[in-house]
Length: 270
Image 1: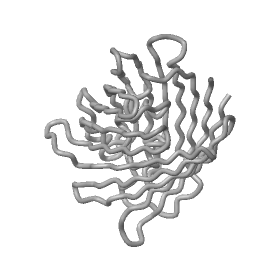
Image 2 (image 1 turned 135 degrees about the horizontal axis):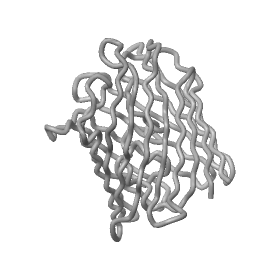
Image 3 (image 1 turned 60 degrees about the horizontal axis):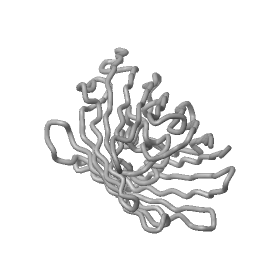
Image 4 (image 1 turned 180 degrees about the vertical axis):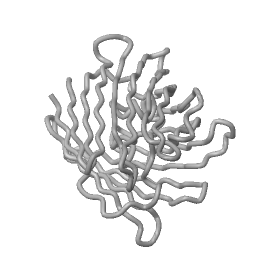
């Protein structure tokens, strides 16, 4: 089965400082659920949320995301043709007010390590303007594991294991999370991110999703920044069908007159 997804940013009224800006690409499903999906079974989102998260799938999927006016991301995931899956991805992101983009490319390898345990590694290259506007480039990798207990998944991810790049905003850090499901209908997820040197979260996230038998799903989340920056509510809505699905996601900071970011997407199944 091939899955082709095209996601477009419908409108962005204003930007709230650096609250939305990150050199790390955030995929749409994780965005709609507060970035809480480190410990969840995923498809193409796994290239960025946890490289082990697609270990228990058997798909060939192609995904594209376009965020106005110039952001874009594309990825290909294949976990069907062999016991070891692979994925590639590319994105281009403009920070608010920036004239130059931060770009990134990824190559992932995914495999089941045992009964109910999956592992993955994503090599990546990120390049763009660093401190003082000087263009920089960094090669690094992320690693992840996922434990799958059918109704419960638990995940752990190490990001920028080789050290990251301060000028590009790439930090060496941990991300951990879990997702609990009931009858493939109701899901609750939670995650936390911390710096590599100190196991103390600087961000805690929560998410939920309801998948209706009537071809739609509702999602939401809340991201808490313990370092004092803006906390962010998120929400999403998907209309599902065997061939085409339409998605919507919104992020809005918990602050007066703060900007809302709206995202819409379309998925085609073949």
